[in-house]
Image (tube, rainbow, N blue to C red):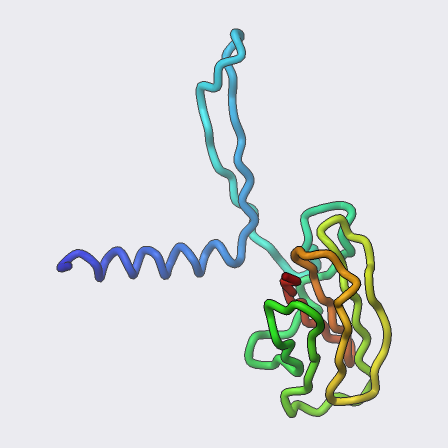
Length: 149
């Protein structure tokens, strides 16, 4: 129990660093095809880098994402069985809210605009899985992971 403090500090520093970097695992093999070395390289994410690493997913520049304290919308319930509600947190926005719901392959299942502060989306027709909900407003963007059970 005495050594938990340094471990927590290390864990906090690691999580803080890893949230701003992209890690790639590389392997080296000998002539017989045996893996002999594994190493991890990190790339610092900067403004203009995409949030998604898959070429099939839509490009979302990091500098358009809102900071955690500036979030204008919340999405609930999550996980869900039949639908979600997108609700304004009270931060004033001047334009419409646009939304797109993507599956893991980058296919758009729902999209639209809403001038309301509270919008309900019906997800009953979707299969169970993980989806990305992209909200756009006033030149800013929020991305949520939505789990459909």
